[in-house]
Image (cartoon, rainbow, N blue to C red):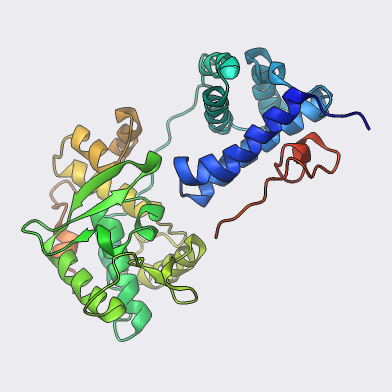
Amino acid sequence: MMKATNESVEIARHISKFFNEYVPFQKTNSCHTMKAYQYALQLYVSFLESEKNVGRTNFGSKWFERSVIEEWLTWLKKVRVCSSETCNNRLASLRIFLKYLGSRNVKYLYLYQEAYEIPRRKTQKKKVTGLSRNAVKALLEAPDLSTHSGKRDLVFMILLYSTATRLDEILSLKNSQLYLDKENPYVTVIGKGSKIRTLYLLPKAVAHLKKYLVEFHGKISDPEAYVFYSRNTGTHGKMTQPAIAKMLKKYATEAHKSCTDVPITLHAHQFRHAKASHWLEDGMNIVQISFLLGHEQLQTTMVYLDITTEDSAKALATLESENDRKVTPKWKNADGSLVSFCGLGNKKK
């Protein structure tokens, strides 16, 4: 078997470090986002191997140039029948890797610059599906407060809705990030790109949190413990996203019986959508909403404008009325395919 070139080994190393070191510790904590990055690059390398006859002996920077990426996007559209939105998401993931690659070796910087110039596919704007105020109210009434888990789940949903945070931002929240005894209580969350933002809390949310902390963390809580922790791993192991998904679907099924506005297929991000739309209905400036949501671009926030419910309701009414990571780099352990050589798992079919 012919040996890999120096450049192919270098790029394979950078791919491994991108996924095993940079993405999880510098870019995002979301397992879904990390999988999206990895899947996009898996598809790209699979395309190079199957459609361009690229292997470890001829793998190099030229295969990441604009003309090749544009061929890949056409292949995604015609062969894999991907939507324009999916193609845009795949391109965005590839751009992030190329930006990282250019930051590690300046000779590759032109690849990111070329990729950045590739226009996004035109897409039809989709209306975001949020939750009505009645749906939020019904969900907050669903947990059984006579049980340990019911008390925890209620506080989790209250915090998720009242702060409009991303799911992983809540799951990664530690006791040291709660400032409940201040004149204006607040919580600090660490968002994408490790950016910190401050979110103020309503009195009822504060009351629920204080009661929860005493019961679940004791009178003197460990500042480094996760606010919402896994029963299996203890206070220093956060709850998993699959566990939250299972919990929300359980309450959605229960709440749907009394309020058909509650979607059976409820997911955590709908709380975020809901709060953003409720803020908007109450006349909050879109720039303020964008800041609270932690969006880098105002255009990202504009999508929430499509959600409308009763204009006369108040944004805070609902709450005021409520009663594992060590990955071994795989670039050395290829099974013969280019995808495996780059440490990207199995070849995509």
